[in-house]
Image (cartoon, rainbow, N blue to C red; front, side, top):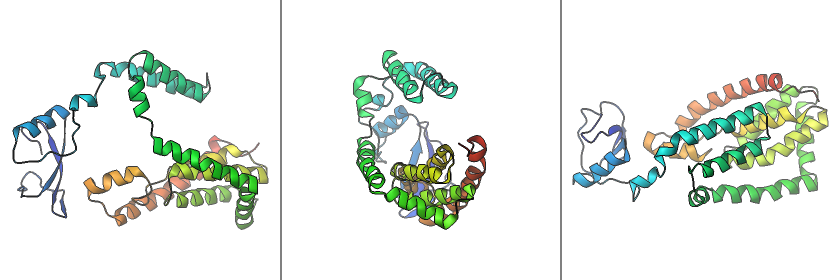
Length: 266
């Protein structure tokens, strides 16, 4: 449903009841919440020209949303170059990312203040804070203990079963803690298991990376999930019904393809 301001209505809530169908004929009532999408200029016009609605969650200066709109093509070109450097392996991935960042600044796509403000300090502190915990597990033998337990349960003669166990453990941990922290904790365990059974650690580490990204089984698995719970009117069960089968499919595909693309042998 489109309004006279060029906005599109994609959701409506009557109190606690979410309305998703027949928005064109639905009558608005006092206290309703209407979810609109469109350009910031149109949202600003709606805020200034209507007294019947209270417009929420718009920036104090909508023009600041796109501080450099004329440099979009430059930014896309730099992104393409960075990805190309990573794919071809001309330079290490870290160097490719640094080259992309420097080009973004050189071409005026970002400045120091915007780059500094874009840093997620919570994520940075979380990762830095968990690294000593991972190192402590290595120094005290905790990682070897966990790796040995996994091998004893699954068996050392079936790398595919070990990959499946690593995927399951990582995905389950990701239900309760950040997937970034999960990867930091599980990657050394995966490497230790690979060394114990005499296989290359690369496919085992890749399984951990893929499993840590399988964060769609519950609303709390990832901040991204939490962002869509409210506007979409989803419940905990909706994520379970869709996320669990999808996670199983991802696990099967990952366990079958990773050893083919990244061989298990040393």
